[in-house]
Length: 415
Image (tube, rainbow, N blue to C red):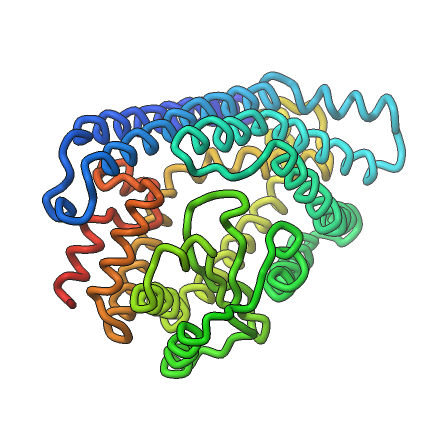
């Protein structure tokens, strides 16, 4: 059984990596083949120069993703069949034989730190080479590393209790430890949704109350009409790190906030901002956030139940390059290899997300002007250098939002 798992894992790792590379290369070729002509639907609103910038920016980002995919696959192979996790476990065992739970936590943290260090050069290159080349990056190196340190500290403060609870339950809570852990994990995620806007997000950005009274009145009228109650309307200093623009809802229950990037407010007029907000309210009205939370809870329930069974199978460890079973190795192996086994399900999740976007657009067209939303989307596509000509297969596999042409074509029917 162990040899079968090894064979299946290697085959899937190679397949997923080659698929990611192939789709990325297809995407680049398709974008570049349409680089010299603006699609007819956008010819009056987007210049050839802006279209070419979007093509080159999307191609550069995709090339980086391809390289990152290869590096991540190599690291995963070294961790598992290459014996890297076994070496980490033995190294910590020689330093700290007991208590086992602490040693296990250190093994897991070590593996996660190594993975982060492998990702770090790609993140840096993305900000200071790719985004900088196209005029999007506003961060300094000191800000980049300051954010990295903050993320690490927040990760430790929030992750350590969950990791400790997981290992403690796995060690002493009996056969149904996975069910108790699922309850803890679910409560933790709901708590994070509630406290993130007020306590965590301000660590990385400044949030100021919206002061434009005219815009504020329009937005509050729309919120009232749509039955949405929020804690407030805020402007985030997105321009401190990037020139990309966006708007979103955050929080859960009474802590819900409406947040606008300052860059978005600078680029769109009042009618367009109202239309963008109506789209976001469409997600609220169709309960997309609640549905995704429910889906996350269901997937985590199934995953932890599966881990509860795999934890007891010796072949699960030996088939993935680990000599002996242990709670921490069961958890770490499952976290590392499950994305490989789930990769081919990604198009289903992307399709579901695109369906949600179409529903939110339809809602926005009923509660605001579809033409205003079209204008806003065209400006955002242009200013964010989002390609108008993605490869259809790549888009169907990955994209959480519909291609611009399809999205705007649907809205035109409602205008």
